[in-house]
Image 1 (cartoon, rainbow, N blue to C red):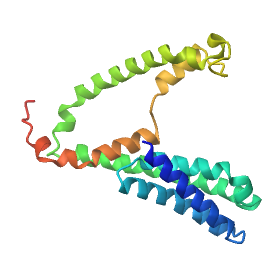
Image 2 (image 1 turned 120 degrees about the horizontal axis):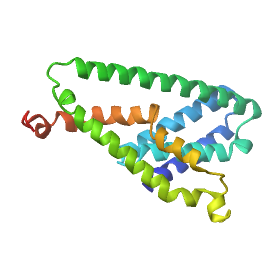
Image 3 (image 1 turned 30 degrees about the vertical axis):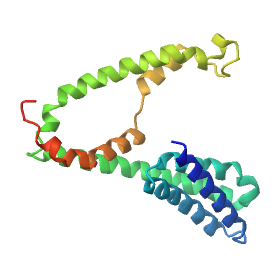
Image 4 (image 1 turned 180 degrees about the horizontal axis):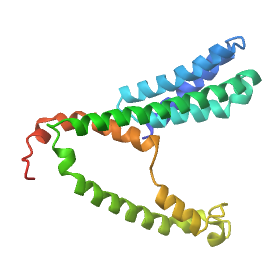
Length: 199
């Protein structure tokens, strides 16, 4: 968990130094930000660290030094570029997830997905109960009215808690995590395929 952010900061620093010598070329500056994101992910994953934390650290570092590193034109272009790229990748995740789910459910050999539906329903209920308890316990620490502004500066009332409880981990992040799990080699391992059908 610590090595990923360190890698991200180092790659962010290297990227910022490269941007400074690009002679203010907007396309090159944008390409360097894209390259830095993928480089930090690949390096962190290659040494068994967190690629996600590395990319976040790279982004935070570059965002912190954007005023002195990137030109005004590049900052505007980068904002539009990353917004469009995020939208496209978000859409692709939904398309890929739909294709993977359809393929798995249509496969007659894949009896596990049909047999485990009741387990999924139970886990769904447990997740909501656990999230509700966590929000209920931690709400005083993020509500300025409870701690009188000492712990937080947010006006966080019960309506926000309900939205956070019901919202949970949805959308592209949850689907991306599910895709990672579904493609994990564990599911095709000898242990998993040898489980009797009546278990």
